[in-house]
Image (tube, rainbow, N blue to C red):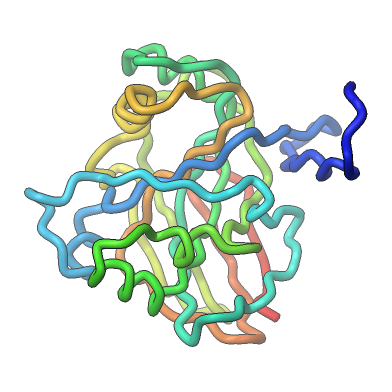
Length: 229
């Protein structure tokens, strides 16, 4: 390893269910507008609003049920529960079959959003970076490895705040299922092992406050728990 002018940042890793070895994270991609009910609740049109892609830095991840600080520069922090795909193989201009074979495992995550800053960005047709890619903006649960290629996904995806259900959707309701989503993303980026892909959120997004306890679950994944502090 070459000498560096300062100590390099620590590698970001995520726990893996029933394994001591952890998943080393390379990049974090996110899809928006991938559930019809959420597109509608945000004022979009499912016929003219295909999924969009954006990114978060790897060090925005919060794993191991760590607490999440309420971010500065916002008074309207929102939760968005999402299924997360963890890649174990590279993808470049991939077929949907190749995409299914590249998924190492699944997790549930929450895309935290400064909704007020996102609203301002939308009005100005500006990037969403400040609204989406801030510190601690991506809590994530442990990764559950797959025993074979990824197949069609169905089953609940839910988020509770202080025990009350806020979001309650079904993975089968994605407008772009995971294989199609990954194939499309691989047309834009060279995906590698270690990449994570947040796949969009169902309806029911809403505000969080300091002290709120959040529980998230997607079918086939380990639970995620965190507290806003």
